[in-house]
Length: 303
Length: 324
Image 1: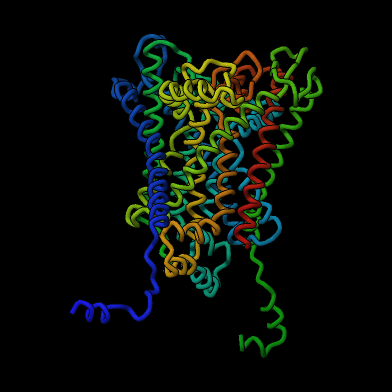
Image 2: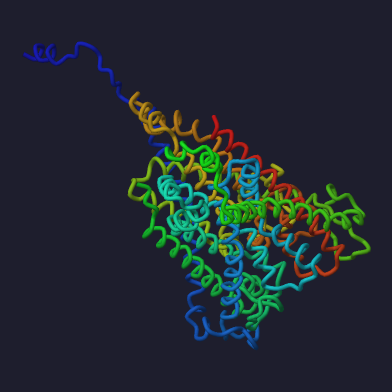
């Protein structure tokens, strides 16, 4: 009985699929573990950092006047006042930078996608890559030697914006380029078939289609430049009170405030440092979230 | 069109491209914007050079081999970049050695291991690391991470101290103001860029190859080893070079973390000192006289050339990978 079953059940040929040997299984498991671990390792510093900053900065940012007052007349050892002046600086420097960088960046991307193909386009693509790798301190030094040293302008928030333009440009060009390439050619062809000039096709058809993606890219770029510290160290002085003039005088910004208060050994200074760090993270996360929301709700329909 | 063909004169008119002023203007604007970027890079190089040359001419010591950077007295400039270069390269290499394997793991995890539903949120979390400003990284590095890593640093120094890289440096390990801490913080900072670029490349691995490997009975790891890694190798190396470029030029995090040292660098990870970028930033308040300022601009020029070369190499590697 038993022998009969075994002959019937026995395979005529050995199976094509071999069992995975233990060594291979272990290697596979090891790889899976290591790869998952790598991800976990990256999460540790992020959460650690965020928890630290929130834990140490929370008390400062809920203090009265933090969002609406400057540090004018506040002594280093007393915890009063707020970061209103630095918030203004951070926003206005970022905004002025965006006003210059976005038109140039978008037009450069239009050139690369819609007109490119020649030698200049190759060079431009290469230079955009190089520009995205230029350290912020080098951009700051360049603006210092051109704007302040050669042209003789004073140190100002506007000089900071100029340096930020150099850092923002490649990000805007890259993201806009990517979005423009996603716009289906059928849309352009339909416009041309109707006799619409190329420039009008780009302005009225291509750019609006890609608009949400471009805005997302701009928001991300803004978030990046607002946290830059090197240009503000070189190009503008710190001010404890508010200054609305971007062309003249010292102006605070959140990174500069953090850096300056780091030199303040008092407990109030430490509190201000962490409070400003948390404020800066909140501002940047706000722009990041905005970018995520915009891209979520209005993706280009490629079909 | 057919109607036009019957009339000779109209044909010649039609076949010429219609030129509109709007088109010409718009084209010029777009081309001009592209040119702005090219010109900007050229101007950066030219202006840094112009400003650096007088100071370099007035330098009393060898610019490349002298360890000290003394530029406070315009009549007696004695600045050299040996130590700046050592600290910059060493901290960036420490960062790269840590970040490269971790980023490879994350990129593989995000493309081939994570559940598809969680891929986007997980990738977003890694990108969040890039959103944290460098000064906050510096703050966290010196106040939290440095002190926390002190026992590990002490242990490394005690056990591997015979090896020059882990020998006693020119600052004390206590407090964590060393290249060791700076390198780890830099590693965290360059993780997102290496991950993001490698991820994009790994994702483009041809599905046919992946399915072929799996159909031949490969385990997931064998599939990755035989298809994804060979396909993405050049992209991964290019991504790492981009990360290296970022680490070389990182300013404020390093400035906040590294303790200044009185003696020249020992080429140990427990050294302190300045990188190019942090040296320039530390002196930013004193940029009033042209000659001392020029000395720092010369250091900035070296940094610019360094990052230019690293990025150009990264790009050519990526370009080759794309073509083959």
